[in-house]
Image (cartoon, rainbow, N blue to C red; front, side):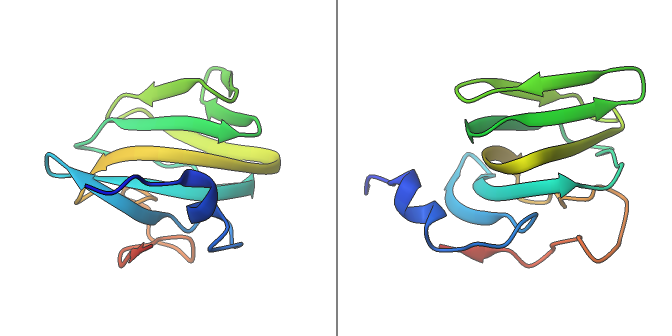
Length: 119
């Protein structure tokens, strides 16, 4: 039962759209990532997705609107809903997801991360 210092964890990497595992609970991973630019449109057939913004402003595009998520806020994207995260400047996010969740949902491309690093 160690305390996890988020700032120290974020300092360990500099790439974008590559989630890292920082903990596990109840069959879920606690993941952090740095994001910048546009991600791919995707959805998750079986999982809801929770995004918590730690630093910066995350824009979440849906087919009918865009939602702005600021530091200290969370956004839950229901399973099956197509979405695209994006950020003009670097954003630090934290996610709580089932261990089986792939970051690009059913889309397989160069941004797909299946073997996540634990830091």
